[in-house]
Length: 171
Image (cartoon, rainbow, N blue to C red; front, top):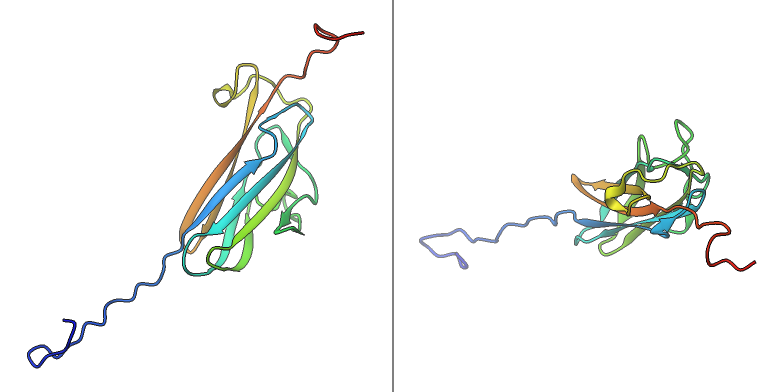
């Protein structure tokens, strides 16, 4: 009851439920269409959508095929983020990376890194996401914190190089 009475001396103060963790992951790539040998820049934004700070976030990402990580290109909130010293140098694969918190309610982590598309990447593979004759590079980032997980992906299509000396060119 709202008030304690002689017949029921107990007062219901309600139940306090701590805020549940909730965050959003948004991944983007600077070039939705690129050619063999082109660089790509990826951005991952993790925003704390809950009312409580997140103590830390585990961020995982596996590079798409036909790409190579650009050494020392990783940054967290505009500051350099060290490459891995074991396994591959990319800091988000294998054991992932822990982004130290706390991440305040409404605040974001912004993680960026670069890759280069292999100069001999095949064309015409994984077409369902791209047009015929192109190859899709689908890259997925996954973040986990306090038993909550979210992920997002970014897509680039490797396009054939423009014709050299073909129609439309003026000598």
